[in-house]
Length: 218
Image (cartoon, rainbow, N blue to C red; front, side):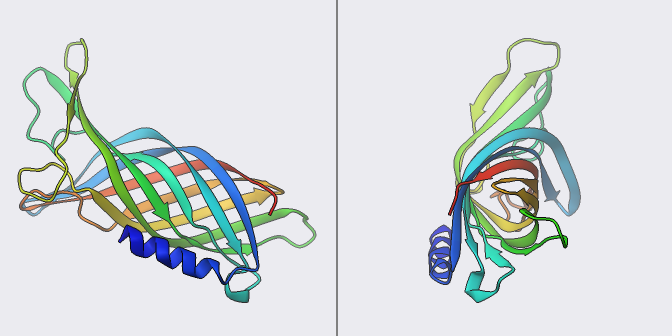
């Protein structure tokens, strides 16, 4: 899937008339939506940092107000409950935090517009697919009465004895404001792939990001 999305982005890039390269950094509030034995729930909202590079293909396919923005980011997702990927917390543990580190490729299609009479100022609204490859998965056990946290590697794979699958994917929603070469905005990753390999359990990542970016002159 990651290869397919990369090839799709490269193919669409040939339709460009203008392009800009940029960078962005930000923070995200992440959680996991899960269902176990037919019971739905949501665990933990944690703050994480992320950073990446982007390539805005302007006037996609000749449409003056439509852009494509392939973005590669290092992102951290996860939740703050041991009930999502692990068994029930042991005695003396207040919570278990899962930290899932991904390299993520997204490709939102953006619609660009601006207010009349305002120069160098645009709004961007759009959506598109994302796919992410897991590069590290850990759980952190937080003691109930103080002391050092205990970090454990999570098992990655699709077997019933594993903790988390290696691929995540879904839909990215995107809103930003661009002033000259600077931009800021928010995005929301809505995970559609089940990242839990456990029987009778599903888990989907959720991530709400605030970011700041800079576009180099194209």
